[in-house]
Image 1 (tube, rainbow, N blue to C red):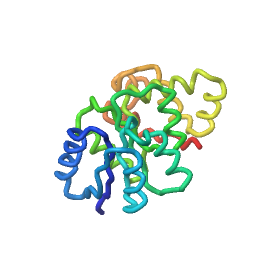
Image 2 (spheres, rainbow, N blue to C red):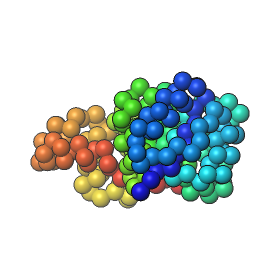
Image 3 (cartoon, one colour):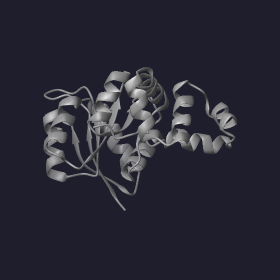
Length: 196
């Protein structure tokens, strides 16, 4: 099954590199490349892609404004945020607006491809450092801990606490009596709640 994408970034070099990256994937089709928020919204409305790869800092409308309009219009396109940096407050705000994945620009290109594939099949993706900071922030507040506990199974909650404390896969696997590979799978594909 083909994955249709719209890519939005205001830097021509990054936009071109992303287009070339996904051109190498036979099951991915780039429908549009956009350099500002308004152009991005028009492309998503017109093409109705499966996924939007969205830079947060763009002219005319930033990523937050694009996400807010997409939510208001109930556009079904799933969003992966691609950013140079992200603090935990921003990450929480974007997750509440329906973002399904967050990838930092410093990450290896193949991680973005993996993220797109996981998000396309309905999973969520946050790179490790963002996940740790976001989960730590949620777990610090009593209300956040209750909300998280109510949405995760006991095993997922246990893994969440271990990831948020910054433990590596091997340590988590030993504590949970899992093979290291299984621990990594849990850690990457942890189903985060859909905050709304």
